[in-house]
Length: 262
Ligand SMILES: [Zn+2]
Ligand SMILES: [Zn+2]
Image (tube, rainbow, N blue to C red; front, side):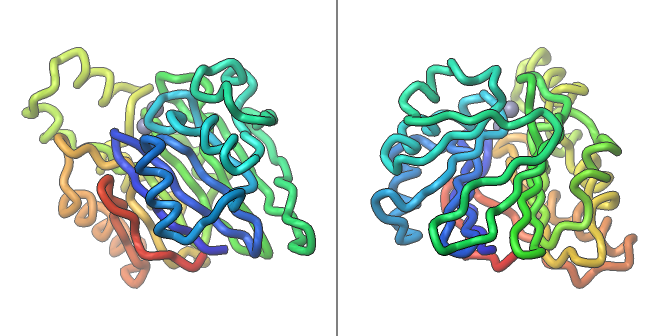
């Protein structure tokens, strides 16, 4: 598989995963013009995307899902609770992602086998929010974001991927001393908010395994975190694990990352 991080942060999240010829969009929260530009930059043409998989209903993940599914005649996968979400109304076809389970995504003709998506529910203030594992030809990618606190069941279900996309939303000190109103600080740091750098390090320690070669830190807050602090926390955790050679990247809001071979 090959991954392209199109953009990540509180203003929109989206990544493109190719499994042979089958193209899967993971979340579609970038504004539609930006999403279309970044897909064009990745040379994805008309009707290039086969499936749009959305983790939850917050707009920074769902905003453009229906319109991009319509443009590409793609199938939209989400929890059935979101079937009537206004951002999804234009999707030509919707299918249910289970709260906890596995489904196959249809492969392009001549491009078997089908990619498999594994799901598990995470604590977040938009319920259900799903963490995802995607498997194809014995390669594994895990996506864990928008999660209020570390959870052992999530780590064990999706552990030891080749590539791990993991939320590193905020540095607790920066959040505490930062500009957000107290109620928002409480929401972000609460058990149904977002992972801090320290909580990311706990999940990283539980999830990195012998196969893992790359960790991508995602959903960084521009006000309450810095790439340096998040990288330091991840590298320290990998050193404690005895895996300092694992590559760590930080996804940005304003530009895509270079493609990553899973
Ligand atoms: Zn989010
Ligand atoms: Zn969210």
